[in-house]
Amino acid sequence: MNLKDRITISEALKTKEGSKVSVAGWLENLNVLGKIAFLKLRDGTSIMQLVVSNKKLLEELKLIHPETVVLVEGLIQKGQQKSGDRELVAEKFEYLGFAEAPLPIDFSGKIATSMDKKLDWRCLSLRNKKDHSIFKVQAKLIEGIQEWLNKNGFYQVFTPCIMGTPSESGSEVFEIKYYNKKAFLRQDPQLHRQLTIAGGLTKIYDIGPSWRAEKSHTSRHLCEHRTCAVEIGFIKSEQDTMRIEEQVIISAFRKVNESCQAELKELQIKLKIPKAPFLELKFPEVYSILEKMNKKKQIGDTLDTEDDKLLWEYIQKEYPACEFYFINGFPFAHKPFYVMNNENSKYARSVDLYYKGIEMSSGGQREHRYNKLIDAIKEKKLNPKSVEWFTKFFKYGVPPHGGFALGIERITMALLDLDNIRKAVLFPRDSERFSP
Image (cartoon, rainbow, N blue to C red; front, side, top):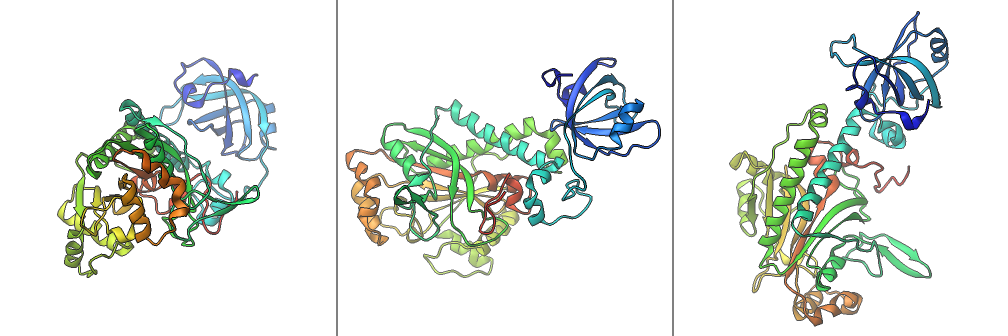
């Protein structure tokens, strides 16, 4: 037998009866009793029943533990199960990787296992079919995002993850040693995206990680997360970025719907494809809506998690078909210096996208005028020298521009109704975990 001759189990299940094939995977249900055994073989594409009646193979299997990796050669026959799936009558086994017993966790879902223990043994917990489905959906989400952007003239770029100064003010930053200097992991690829626009690449997107040293240990927060960050030049207003984001989301959801019906069924999700334009709520009207929901806020306050929940309750009542919605015009006092402020107003051209009451992205129009940028830096009580590496380029002609950064794990969590964002990450990093 040779691994190069193997086919996947999903291919084997479509192979005509009587064909001789080789498949490989992990063994399940290793209960050898009597003169015949029925086993399960799983390879990541599907699961197939193996029928073993060869006396020598049966004796070998008595010494083998579940999750052992094997290469199997045999004949395809019509299955005896109700599903009618084909099964494989095993003739030869080659053992590729032996598993010890007992397994440190049960990943079948039959035995309750804590989130922490699953993450301690993440490589094993990932072998669960539902976990596979999560990451297949996530892959297609990203593929759908990229398809629309690529078809509409956007170029994928790669901006740096190491910064000489923090990309945003505040303490939520990881400091690292960079040779004999102090550096920081980026909190957002924002500023370098803007510089790329200033450099003349006016339709770009960047998919990659960002880091925030958040001490909160909630079901929605991570220290390391990934975004698809989009930036476009020569816009009229933040409305242009909203129209682009709508199409990106619709394309992503269509791709999942076309490619992941089996996974959505496994996860018991009925996917709704949103329609453009999405609902838009604006400040200061947001304060009036919250007051109707018995939450009084001061003019100039930003939103907290309770406000997000109340606004979602309001939308479910007033717009029952709506799952995606924008909140526009956040108070400038609570926004970074690079956000454009509306003229003679306390409200910025700052837009967040929400899905099922959870923030998915932050974006809007950026300030492209050098003098206004410096004024904002002073208003925020920042040291102009600390961001001069960024602002100096705005002296030399930068077009109006804007964009957004869409959280990959966040949208996966919300789409699949996961109760914890860590389920949408292969190997999560939070305030208490950086291994495995």
